[in-house]
Length: 363
Image 1 (cartoon, rainbow, N blue to C red):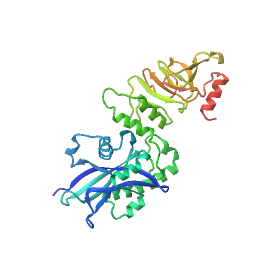
Image 2: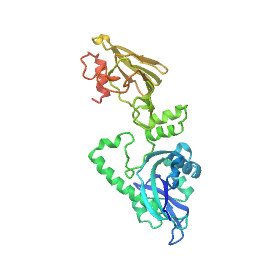
Image 3: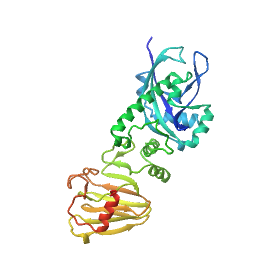
Image 4: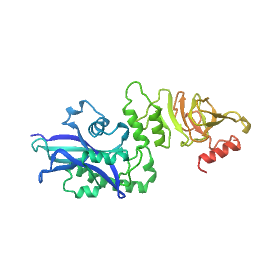
């Protein structure tokens, strides 16, 4: 008889108890411990693939399975949770609890899901669950074999990440970097989690970005929210078709740069006030610079071969579109890339621009 093969997702919901990271486990409705016939303690889980390879003919994104559990089954409001990251799978081979003990190979995919801390205790009470640390779960005799495999994976994974980030701390703060799960519980979801959740609801030919979604995404991060870029590097980004499209705030660092030709950049102010300094690349002297302050609803079009720098005069939100052929988002030599930083150019700058560059660079 051939071996059964199943893929499942196990959802990791973290909570802080007495300074230690804990995970939600609850009594499984149909899976009983053979020694005492009491329900196993399980992580929230759902089968995603039954059998191979036929089951892979119709793909279903992981968001659907998370929604099935948290939204439909656990009755969490949609805005109260967001998928943070998918972890590498754990493997378990054991008799099936629902198929007369048939030997089954389980591929278990842990999914780290942020849940609003205000929902932690109401959720635990609804499912009659409890919060366990990795150590407590591994020592608990009632924890299910699949959940136990996930907790063993978490301990190994945390040790490997701690060693990696101790050697290269900058890696931990890159977009979509693997995040440690045992060092704390965030009060808010990450920018990447919110952006990918927005994308999962907007995969049709018409994408709708509400002000509420935009505000939530920008508030969660400290960089621009780039929806279309020349070279997509994050999963929520789409290919720019001759243009790039981004939203940015006062938290984003700006620099003085000149556009290659032909490249056009358009800035729009949604909230706050923004100043822009600029001069034609070919004009010399501090008197060649111009200055404007953009108010909410104002726009500025920056043509090719214009040295410029923008700066928020307080908290603000804006949009920027850049269009033109070639490597729009590339940074390098003038004439080869869309943007060339003016850091080492011989142009004379007004004292105000020099001071602005110093402050923006943290100098």
